[in-house]
Length: 160
Image 1 (cartoon, one colour):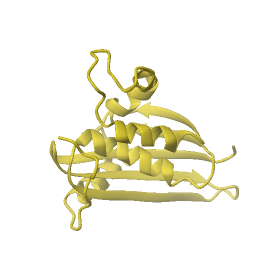
Image 2 (image 1 turned 135 degrees about the horizontal axis):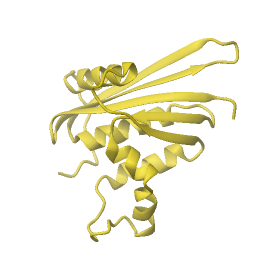
Image 3 (image 1 turned 90 degrees about the vertical axis):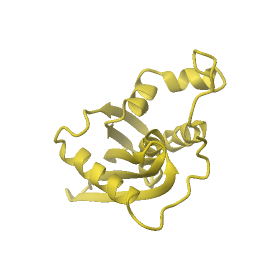
Image 4 (image 1 turned 180 degrees about the horizontal axis):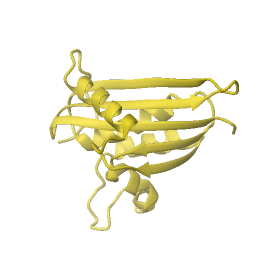
């Protein structure tokens, strides 16, 4: 795997639940040393911030055309800790139940994330949000603009 991709993601929600959006930026340098960047975003009529944080990572990983080494950077502790602290592994093992025996929220997106990251080697990195990180700030702007945009999508699997 010679493709080293950097992905930056963010989600936003106006109200929680409310209108939401995600933003993602994929960056890489090709074999000729050329820098490439791709922005992804979409807005939803009614959703939650956590769903948008997850969807940003999912859509970015799904956009990759071949197995890659990825560093995915997010300001979402929900996303990053679920992976790095092995919560996701435990939820799967416990048939999507938390330690409290309550069902895990956003199972549809967690399952989609598992599938999206499967062909890749992905390192999840947390950064503090709204702290001046160039790509995090750009992702936030993409996510907010998407949430406030027109032609919002329906989050079919959202359960309040």
